[in-house]
Image (cartoon, rainbow, N blue to C red):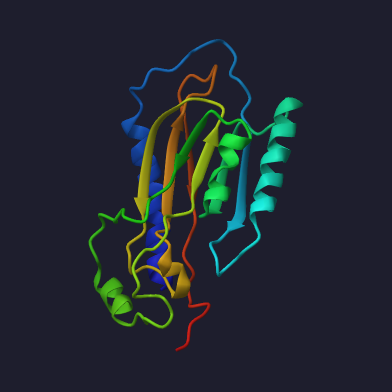
Length: 205
């Protein structure tokens, strides 16, 4: 499994580089001074029932805090969320005033990477009782919220077999966005990912 994770990290770096290179021709504003940019990353633990419950009020408080920061002019310009699986979690961006909101890989998305021999061996050992053979019931749980225009988006789910335990029920992966920051000579690539567990965390066998 460690080899799978290492290859995954390399693929993230390669994908980010390719995404940035593919967008170099995109026009961008070019004033003399660039606008400062602040980024917040937040795993909000927005797991669905029965893994978690009673979280809607917490997500409302997160949105309220971001709104208050916006009113004070100190809000993060970009927020990347992990584990935003529920509808109440996914409303944080709209409720806190972010104009641009994009999601990561959906449950139906599939990786285009070919399976390796190591991957096939790992997949063969998957357990139904641990949730490893039930398919993808949820999306990636990734969201990117931005005050600045998002020019392009790329989503890349991890291979379906590259997971363990109940993590396999979510289609985790990578979300990349090309953001036009006012005053920046070129757009900024913002990347977020949520890795799968290296071992099963639950189940009956």
